[in-house]
Length: 111
Image (tube, rainbow, N blue to C red; front, side, top):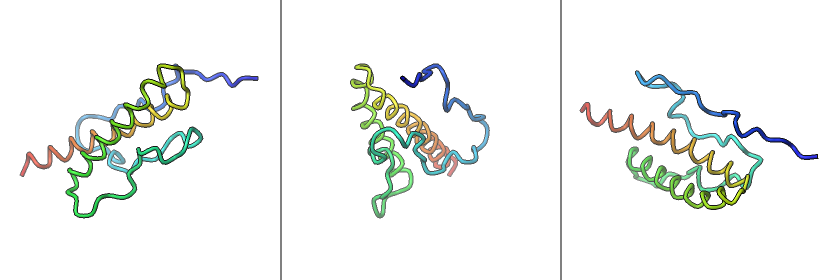
């Protein structure tokens, strides 16, 4: 018996309102798919570098997440389900980090 997965089911497509800050947008990333692959795939940056600026470390996190996502693209096209889940998880994490970077930029622009 094979578990039929439905690729058309949207998982995290809730679009926040562009006005104001979204509660929970800056919350730490929680991996949504714990059962696929090792949990420490480089997406979750538990240790922040000491003395790093808030925006700097967020930007660095974003770059490393994008770098990790790049490694999953080829296996995803080859049909790897686990790579696809890791890629999806990376996209969700990157989206949250982009939001944080944008908020940081807007805060800096006001001062």
